[in-house]
Amino acid sequence: MAMASVAFPTYKEVLQDFVTQAGFQLPPHPADPGFEKEVIDACMGQDLPTEKAIVLAKVGAATAKWFYPSHPRELQLEIAKFTAFATIIDDLGCLFPDALRTYRERLISGQPMDAKIMQALMVNSQYLSQTFFDTWDGDMIVKGVLEFFSANRAEIERSHQLKKTEGSSSFTTYFRLKSGVTEPYAYFLFPVSERTNPGDFAHRSLVPDLMAFMNEVNDLMSFYKESMVGDERDNAIHMHACATGEGLTQALLDYRASCLELIRRLRATAAELGPDVQRKVDEFLNGYMAFHLMVPRYRLSELSLSYANPVSVPKKRVETKGTFALYSLAYAGF
Image (cartoon, rainbow, N blue to C red):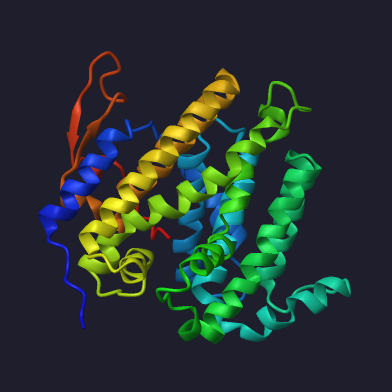
C-alpha cells in the first residue's frame, strides 16, 4: 500500500518550527573565488568527467567554509578537498566498482588504490590526520574513509538488501554512520591548533551526537527535494515511517524532535567544555543548517522560511524570507 504524501504547508510548518526552535542564525559567508579554484584544480586530472568534477569541487569548497568558518585557511582547503573527493566517489563509484572491491587488499599490501580519486582521498586523509589532528582523532578520520569505501561498494552491489524493514531499523542507523562519513567531519571540528589545551580529549564526548546531528538534520532538510519535489521513497524519513508504522508527517515530527534534542545536548555539553568549544560547536551547527538552506540543490528557498539574519544588521533581529539570491552559490550539494 502506498504511503500518503506530505502536503507542502505541512512540511513548511515542520521545517519552520525546526529552524526557529533551533535558534538558527544565518552566518556570514564571504566570497572567496580563489579558494574554490584551488579545490577545482585538485579535482582535475582524476580521470573523471570534467563538468562533474567541477560541480562537486564546489560542494567541497562550500562545505568547508560553511561548517568550519573560523578554521585556518590551510585546514579549510584540505577539508574541502576531502569533501570533494568523497562526494565524487559517492556519486561516481559505479564507474569503478572493481577499485572499491580491491581497496582493502591493496591497502594492506602497500599498493595505491585502483581508482585515482580513491588514492587522492587516502592521501588527503592521511595528510589531514598527520598535520592537524592528534593520533586518536586522525585514526578515526582515516577509519571513516575505509568504512566509506566499504559502504559505497555495498550500496552499489547490494542496495536492494539495504532497504529498511520493521526489524532492521538499528542496522539502517548503523549503516548510515558508515556511508555518511560523519565521523571525520565531527573530528574536523577539533584540530590541535584550535584547542586551548591540546592534551585535553574532552571534545570527544561530543562526537556521537555530532554524527547523529549531521545525519538526522540532513534527512529532515533533504526530504523536500528528495520526496516532495522528487519521487524518492527509500530515504530515512520513509524508512522510519515504515519501521514504526507511522505516517510520514509523524515521521517528520519525530525527526524534528530528535534533531532539536541533539542540538540542545550539543550546546549544553559544549558550554561545559568552555567558550572556545562552545563557539566552534555553534559555528558548526549554524553552518550545517545554513548549508542546506542556502545551497540551491535542496530547493528550500521555495519554502520562503523566516529566520534570524544578524549579518545584514548586527544590532537588530531581521527576519529573512527566502533571500537566497543574495548568495551566488551554484553548488550541487550532497
